[in-house]
Image (cartoon, rainbow, N blue to C red; front, side):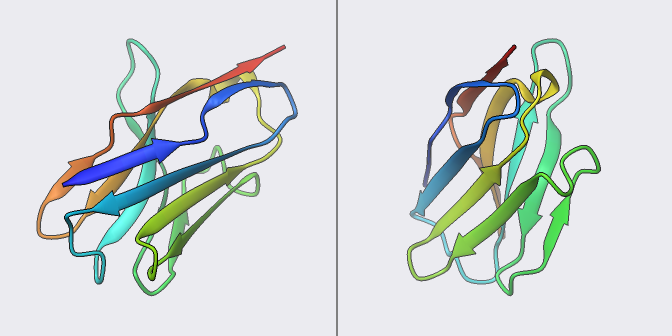
Length: 113
């Protein structure tokens, strides 16, 4: 099982980034995919999730700024992040929930002022 993230990096306040995750070795259909993030010293928190059918859920802090999407044909899930602020700085993890739960290795997003 592999969840491979890409797209993290350094961005200025107000900027945008797009994260992508490719899943392999898992049954993509019927699974929920999503993104979590974690700051050192804090618990990992859900950012956004999307069901196989396309139903989405967002944390209140990102609603209206982030958009999650998935391509079931390519086993990918993406997170478009706009209007980024310093509070969005974190390691972002791709998340898979089927019969089991899996996490990617994480990608660092740093928002600088």
